[in-house]
Image (tube, rainbow, N blue to C red; front, side, top):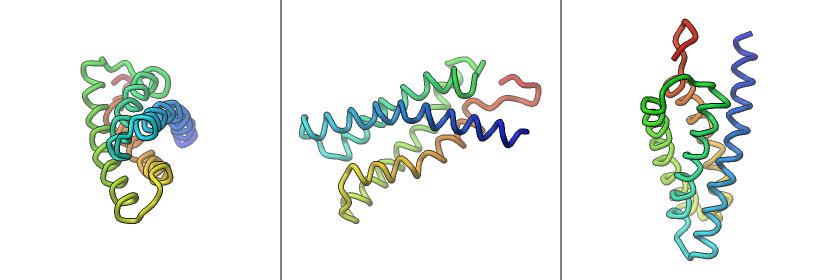
Length: 134
């Protein structure tokens, strides 16, 4: 039963992630295509926007956390910050070293980071104690 509940929570997390990813990609496209920003800079800015969107929805909808924002938000941003570093590194490797188009590189990077973000937030940011609290 726990595995099924965890799968459902992961699917909710991924669905919420689509909303944050849409915000991320929208800002990335605007900055690169209309603003002339380098793809890595646009990706980083989009990532930060997506992280804030994801935090708000994940706290309430996915993990149903009772943990105070003063404790949960810094943890979430720590997980996101590590993800941001991976995002920038992977974007650099995929675009500059491997020559992939920046949008394809971003899709691959997003897929790779999905697992990192879920595990980090499930086991640390929003983890509940044995009694069901935070």
